[in-house]
Length: 144
Image (cartoon, rainbow, N blue to C red; front, side, top):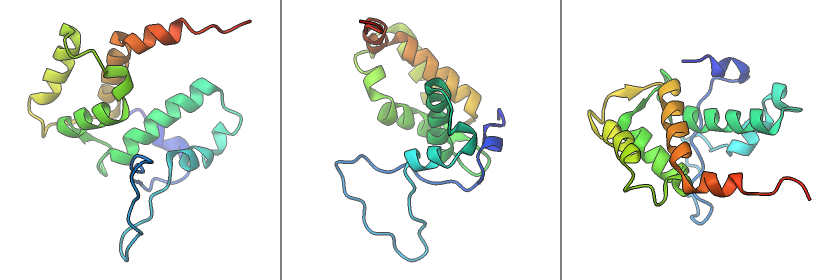
């Protein structure tokens, strides 16, 4: 693990909120209430004046941490699911690309095997680099 948890005041893990279109059931006794990523991010004092890039990376780390087990790892199956649900706009339409198939196939092999944050980020960045959405982002005008 890269030590990203050291900058977070609490090592308590929270689940990522479900998509806003679904209503979550009220918290029941014994279940911890889910804290939105935005509130978790706001609780990191070192990022109060953080740059957009720092906050973007911290968000990725929080999403990972919220899904990881107590040892800070995800199974390959959980990783694949997390990427497909939380990164879907980046991977949409990439299914026929050999590199995409290679990344997903690697996650399909031994799906119970655990991966750490660094391996997760390599997969995340690799999928982003393949994305048509990345080209669209690059074409956005930054100045008038």
